[in-house]
Amino acid sequence: MNINATLFAQAVVFLAFIWFSAKFIWPHLLTAIETRQKTIADGLAAAEKGKQALEFSSKQADEEIGKARSRAGDIIGQAEKRASQMIEEAKLAARDEGGREKAAAKAEIEQEVSRAREALREQVAALAVAGAEKILRREINAQAHVELLAQLKKEI
Image 1 (cartoon, rainbow, N blue to C red):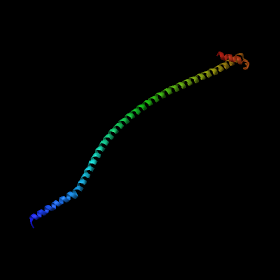
Image 2 (spheres, one colour; image 1 turned 90 degrees about the horizontal axis):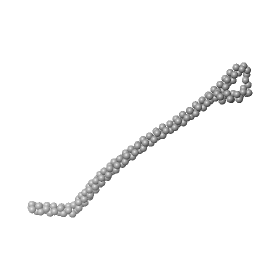
Image 3 (cartoon, rainbow, N blue to C red; image 1 turned 120 degrees about the horizontal axis):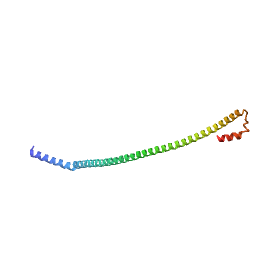
Image 4 (tube, one colour; image 1 turned 90 degrees about the vertical axis):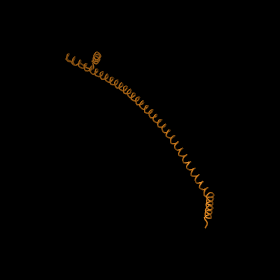
């Protein structure tokens, strides 16, 4: 065997291998590489969009939380104001009720005083009649002297 023939044969086989690889294997490898590059690029783009969406959502959430806090403060303020109004209304109602009860009590007292005066007048008239009866030592007819008793009541 000749070394030149061996080298020549190896060179021909190597060139055939290169041609075969370039013709049949290389296009499939390029397609797979391009597909993988596209998949990676799409993944990176989706990740960037996700990051932007997360930032946007975070900003929106912060704004909504701020609005909710503001609204909660307004509601608390309104509730406190309404509570103060209710307390004032209750105080006024209690004052009015106290005034009515005081007036009713005064009217009742006046009625009791009038009744007591009337009862006292009747007792004084009866005592006067009894005293007069004892002084005169005779019995006075109550029916005959009704007018006298009425006049005596008015005077007392």
